[in-house]
Image 1: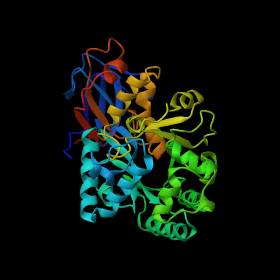
Image 2 (image 1 turned 90 degrees about the horizontal axis):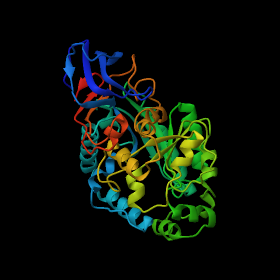
Image 3 (image 1 turned 120 degrees about the vertical axis):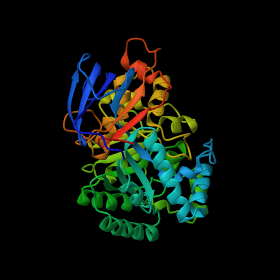
Image 4 (image 1 turned 45 degrees about the vertical axis):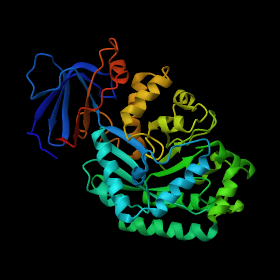
Length: 401
């Protein structure tokens, strides 16, 4: 990372702190890795003036799978969710360790170019830890657990414990746990992983209510997941939860919980207080899912953050592109809400909100510079979200990348 002289000042046409409304002709003062002041002053001389651009907090990708970066364009989503899963599993089984490591680094580089300065990565075997620990951005690496049968669940938990023992929190990289999904994790493994997460004081992420097929499996023990799990040799009807709500309960409501997708949660679902729904808009659309209950959740005060999912289901790892797409599809959601979902809400979900996610004095100098559209009228959020202009520059921990 290239260092900047300290302290120094940066001006933009619009500053979006996120925790407060945007303001015009804003100036940030940065000293080392920290923001020390925000002000509006058109006439004051500054060190860097980015002109007709927006400055917003570094983006937060609350859910991705960097190890699947090699599947870009090779595994298009379709109507058959389990067939898509078969192709993902085949890729993971066939890929070499060198290939996966290279894919992680490629996905990480793309994330940084797109303005992500904090991400949550679901990691098979925790393999992305070393790459993320050496990266300039902040991260949570969620060690993924699988095990529907009793014979697989116990070793899976043991391996997770061992991994946590060898991967303590670092200054910019922290561990988490991810019992994968209700169709791949035993009821008892959810509860035992929840206890381990609570004891370790780390967040827990679960893919939940992602597909119609998942709900059919949980409620009726029927549908394409039955043959899929039998084919893999891991069918165990007794190990399945019977509903998404039971999974939420098993994960322990005292944990910091991220429920990924939530595409088929009922709008009235009781979401635990410390929870976040992580919505992946373009992946949701690629599978042709029913409309997401996001609007009701937001109205209820449920925290919603944005994720890109992986390149097995998404064209890129661009969080800003996700919220711009969502702006087109759900214009009733206010621009300030969308931007919060892509920044501060994600930082809160991942446990980093004291450090990043908004532009505030004392917080890390993580920000992106984005050219503004001339077609958005006078509303700065519209100027930002109606544009297709990409992130121009990225500042992470006070350094330009």
